[in-house]
Image (cartoon, rainbow, N blue to C red):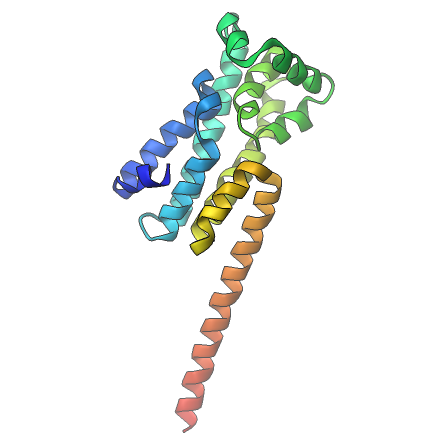
Length: 209
């Protein structure tokens, strides 16, 4: 996905990524789309100056949240969970997710935003299980923002370790990735602040000379 998006100008890459992320979280085809990889690729492009980091984070967060809202809307209407969904995902997996939602809809909805496949399915199943839209939005939106922003920052500031970060994301999921993104962001901020302080001190020494 990184090489694919890198072949487009910044604004067009943002638009393509938004479509992919919306589909990944809102359409059934999303179970085979690279959600996390797309956000990391946006972050990498931002880190290399192709587009602003804030724009990449905003698009990643907004697109996945909008997709989840669409998934909830589809799940609230008859026929959304049809035979095609059962055939694609499997009755056993759907039964496990519905069991997790039973009585623990809020935490399950929030947690599943962090992982592929269930991020696509849970909004539909939450609506089917009777979870109110306001409750779903309150649980899903903050995690969607953390997911989009965290992965964007991680991709932007991973530097030469981008390939390793990309592999780790597929294995670890968001909880550890979000923590890593915060750490990377803090390290970058402290380094920049230290550099600025050194420049100011250097100018002061030269002035006194």
